[in-house]
Image (cartoon, rainbow, N blue to C red; front, side):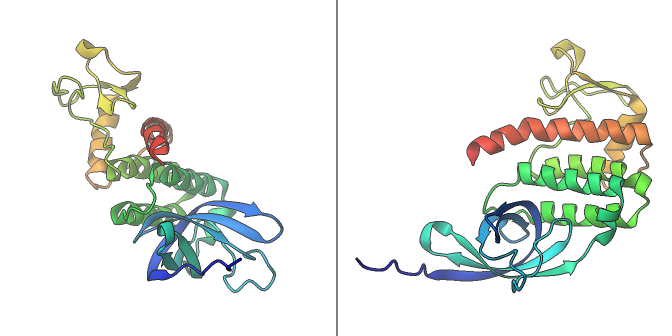
Length: 245
């Protein structure tokens, strides 16, 4: 019986990456999903990754990594050739608030990211947000997470509409509170049935500024509300993404 031939390497890709899922397999192997800047989400099986003398070193989340990937001609498969940490974020694991915010952000990224589709804007957004969560005050971690979560959804095409009704396009007046439906994608006016989330006028204005990239401070309660809104928005749209995988 002929021995199986080794898959040909189509090309080699060097790319920054974030680890978004890790599953330990057996005694030494790891099944890892990375979100890469150059290729989107990729899953690789890494043999002997947990061996004491593994040449790859630790495969851990939260840090920015540099990967060298071999793209195989067979079925667009990917093999991990090399890995290095280029931005270690040790402070994230030492503080519960920072760790929770960073972990949630990576979970959202994993839920939204399609396989093998480059999304450099999303990568840069999450990479920068992780830096802000680590370098800023612990009390501000949820606020960073909240704005980054809605910005991440927008980067993948799920922008939350804060100016007008998503169903009839009626504008929401300046200085007015609004009813939002995360699954519908934003404001739903009362004439169209309204939404389940009431957003006060002041918070809506602050969030509009934040989504434009302007400096905006969110208090603890507002940050938690917006983080919950981001969670619900991403969960609603990630269902469709999961179905396409």
